[in-house]
Length: 238
Length: 120
Image (cartoon, rainbow over the protein chains, first blue to last red):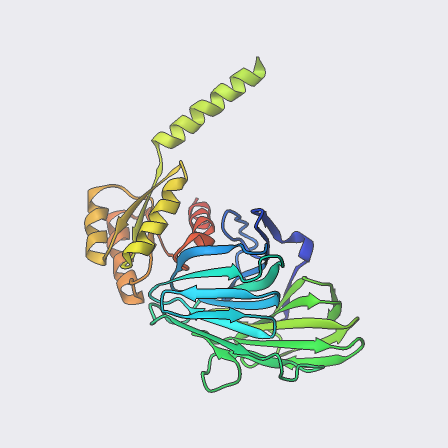
């Protein structure tokens, strides 16, 4: 029996630290709502905008799969493993925090904001050796199709993580219809509308809405306008 | 007058809660991350965090004072966590043991709130 959960953009937690504005789908930092804790292994979905020249100073993480997807601007990453990188729209960054990692994330530009999705998944293995990766998918075709940008398999397309999860991203033209078939019957899919309006199994979603579906082998998506969509297939239990 | 009575009552309540802080034991093998978690916990006036750098230190700390909540952090694997859970709950059946993920401020507050709320 299909189960769904709708998270309208306006119902997300809001945090405004001046330099950082964050819209948080699930309980994060000082926010706690027992009804908004996670969607299976998907624990954090933050829609962050950082002012020019500002950013997250050095801070630690452990035992979490942390994915960043820039939407606008340039993010500058440095970590305790010696990685230093710039991440831009069309790229995806992943950190397996494992036994512990320190990192900074700053807006590279002084006068332009950077906006990005910060996504955390519970790992399926504890205390792994920390790792960092980023990939550019900007040139690959995601027009009216879903491009895989993350999987559990290091030999598969996109970055990989310690979780039985798959992420796909697509740019859909108005009125285009597309079907996504889940990889595993133990998984659900969380659909996040980056831009535009879509309809999913009869549910209309607008920009920055989220919609989770369990116990469905596939989802049908119709673009009601030109739209950018992120699909996150994650396990219910891990 | 009513306001004064209410604010006085609230002050007494806060004082009482501060005197009866929720004692939280954190077991994590990464010293800096353990320090960060303890600092974050102790920022909350109603919580008191105590750290242990290993399972052995955690058992020793658990035997020396009463804890309401135990967080299993980085370095505590599933098998060790299960053993600690049995050890702690056999000594104090009401103690809550949860796994902490993330190693920082992101999830800590809601993890603790959720554990304390759902245990009531």
